[in-house]
Length: 338
Image 1 (cartoon, rainbow, N blue to C red):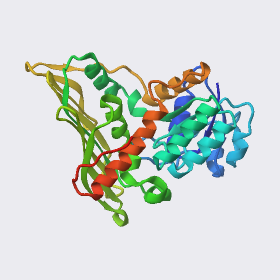
Image 2: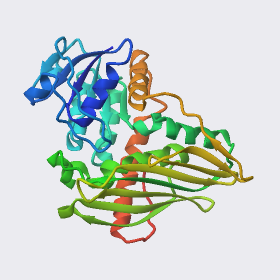
Image 3: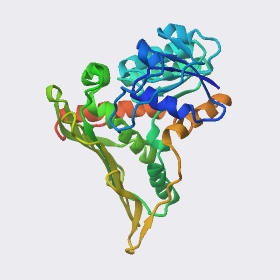
């Protein structure tokens, strides 16, 4: 599979390094207007998880400075789009119309209407469209999914997902809510997607929080209310810039025990109702590589990505937008149309 990557920022660099490790996958083209990055110098790239930039060999890789040029390359099977969020929908639609399979960084779009339009274009052109919701492929979240789906912990009653980081300062578009959707859409879309993946859509939602664009702060505590008095909480967002550390964690209280994980040093474990503790097995898997491998396998067989369908990714955008509306109503329960 010959893949072209559009956008050589933090996520573009991360995807390329994963792609280069996959047998049968070829990084065939890159697209950027940054000459240093086109030359393979990605050392200046910054992100919120501390993955360092790298110096890569693009000697045998086609280099394009304009998006239409890479989309017009007939040798490419798939396009990996790692552009700012406001560019996702138009570029993905153009790529699908050009006959390319598309892997698209999260969030899928700024609004659910644009997301649905992408899905319609993928169907119309019989191409694979998948959004890079990498949490589904991370071992620590796969461990949670296995415990819940197997029934070993019983019915989940209260789930809490937390994700926090400093407000990003490395890309100006991220600080513009009209272009990024702000900290809740950009960061917590991971955890909203995980709630949809594990529990489906909620009946109602409520939320409180605070947004202060001038200081970079955009935080929320949202409750997703499910039938049977089951609740999922999504909390966190962007905090004050530069020094605030990145962290992610979850706690799921079920009838038969509690499943817990924190990036701050608690490995995934099941704390059983009988007092026993079981560390959950974690395969030696890089989530980004697993995500791209799965996407490419879907492309080879022209098969819809059932494990990470774009319809659910569009639902995550709609639900996150609903949470932001609920935050504006300061705790009032509202219904969401996903």
